[in-house]
Image (tube, rainbow, N blue to C red; front, side, top):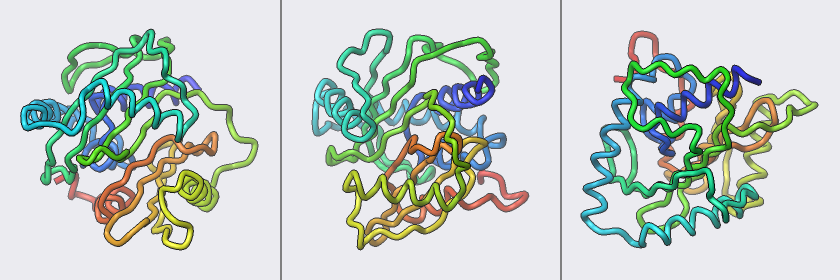
Length: 250
């Protein structure tokens, strides 16, 4: 369990505590974890710059309103109660679309545990997380129109499932999650595929309407959904497609 938590902690930090699973080199490249970390750190800097531009250009709701919407979303989708945010720093980032990273315009609310608040880090920073215990970290993203785009739970300690989690069972778990939370009508969704995203996550892609899909991460040890994000079908499918040897992230 210790190694598993450490891996997810480092991943969350390198992604700047921001849920952008569609961002090439960050969440969408989980299957290529080792080769993407420096790119993720660089992309994080670009994200922060564009968030300033988006904020200056106006926003559909206030920071406080987005935080409340994020709390509601965490409770509605995952049963997480964040009424009391003691021990967390809460931030709201406004991000312009970044076509070069296949990232859409969005607003992200991050609930960062104080244990993970390391301020600024560089791409070559080494952090020893071996003996660090932390509360879960939560990211909730919203479309430009203010609707929930995705939610990501990090550093959660779930009990291991008694039954082995296979690609097929992960797809069914993701499918039931989509139906139960009315993310898509049962007769309109289509499972497009799945792949091992990391040592403890199976990513599942479900088309919910023409040209749009949900990227859903299922914890392969606990058998529970850890994250989901609405994105273009192209980006979602790309996220479960291994890089060609020699091509890298470019």
